[in-house]
Image 1 (cartoon, one colour):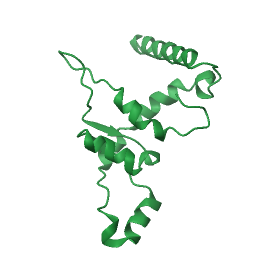
Image 2 (cartoon, helix red, strand yellow; image 1 turned 45 degrees about the vertical axis):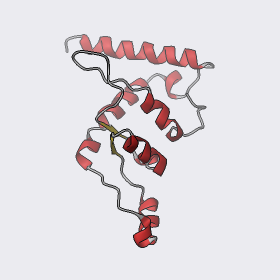
Image 3 (cartoon, rainbow, N blue to C red; image 1 turned 60 degrees about the horizontal axis):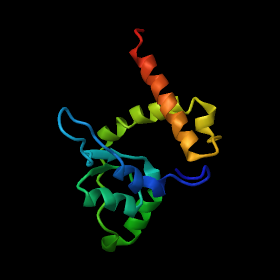
Image 4 (tube, rainbow, N blue to C red; image 1 turned 90 degrees about the horizontal axis):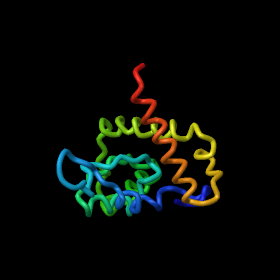
Length: 136
């Protein structure tokens, strides 16, 4: 967790390192097929880390980064490959985060300790999961 005023982008590696993808059998994989993020995560370091781990990064390039790359000419490197179709599917995660943030305490980080904030996240996740089990 970061302080409320801090950006989330520096935590990209820590979050990606903690991901576990469950399959049908065996232990969970620690390397997802792809990771989707918005333009805030488009730094060189955030692109290099998934590349080293052979994870496809679906992160669009910021306009200022593209302009700086083009300004450098052939020394600026290749354009970032970006497939817009998997990026569109990212909205599922965004909608889930918005549902979690319906609780003011989680949205504005009122909790004093990381443990109580995490407990609120677990509680909100459980409530959303139980609601999804009810017939419509």
